[in-house]
Image 1 (cartoon, helix red, strand yellow):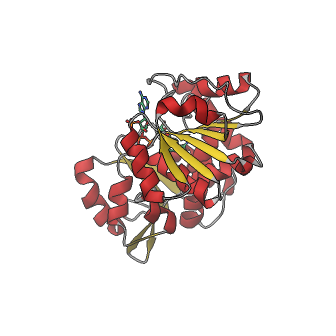
Image 2 (cartoon, helix red, strand yellow):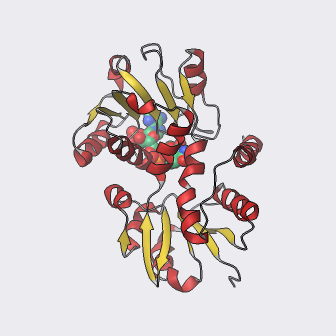
Length: 279
Ligand code: NAP
C-alpha cells in the first residue's frame, strides 16, 4: 500500500535505473516525506498498467525503455515535446486523467548549458544515431535555432525518417560522410549505443573537428567513454551524458512533490560512485 506520495519508474528491465537513487536523494535532502520506486512491467502488460494508472495510488512517474511510445498512446494529453517525439518519459495525474511529458530534450539542453556555455553558437551540429534519444536531441537543437543539424546513422533510412519528420534545418547523411561533415561541426553528439558498457567502442577520428568544438556523449555507463577521451586529447570541450540524466529528472520531481530540486555536485558524486561500482 502507498502510504506517502510515491512516484514510480516503469520499464523492462528497470533494475539498473538510477532514477530511484536520484529522486530519493532529493526527497531526503529537501526533507519531503515521499518515495520513488521501480516497477518492472513486461511489454505485454504495459497498456493495462497505464490504463489503470490512476487507481494504483502513485502521484506520477517516469517511463523508460521500452515503454515511452506506449505511454504516449496511453496518456489523455501530452506536452509539446512528447507530442513532437511521440514518446512520453514523465507521467502525472490531472485529477484522474493521465498526462504525459518528455523531459529528455530539456535535460540535454540544461546539461550543455551548464557544462559548455555558448555551445549553441555551433553553426552545424552532427548527431550520431537515429533512435529515440536522437529524436529528443534533434528537437532540442531545433528549439535553440541551430542552423544546420545533420543526423548520421548506420541505417540511413532511420536518419532520413528523422529529417523528414522535423524538416529544415535537419538533414540526413551517411556514416562515410563524417570526415567531411566534422570539418564544419561546432557540436558533435553521440546518441548511439556505441561506447556503452557491453557494446563496441565508437571508432571515430575527431581530427577534422574545428578547434573549440563541443563533443557530447549521451552514454553515461561508462562515464568516461572513448569518444570523450579522444575529444579531451584534442583539447575539445568534452561533455558526458550524466548531466542529461540528472537534469531530465528535475521537472518530474517538481510536478510530483512540489519543490524544484537542484542538480548538485553531491548528487552527481552519488551517481558517479554507483556507475563506478557497476562498471
Ligand atoms: P535506440 O533507440 O536503440 O537507438 C540506438 C542507436 O544506436 C541507433 O541509431 C543504432 O543504429 C545505433 N547503433 C547501435 N549499434 C550500432 C553499431 N554497432 N554501429 C552503429 N550504430 C549503432 O537507443 P536510444 O534510446 O536512442 O539510446 C541511445 C543511447 O543514448 C543509449 O546509450 C542510451 O543509454 C543513451 N541515452 C542517454 C540519456 C541520458 O540521459 N544521458 C537519455 C537517453 C538515452 P541503427 O539505427 O543502424 O540500428
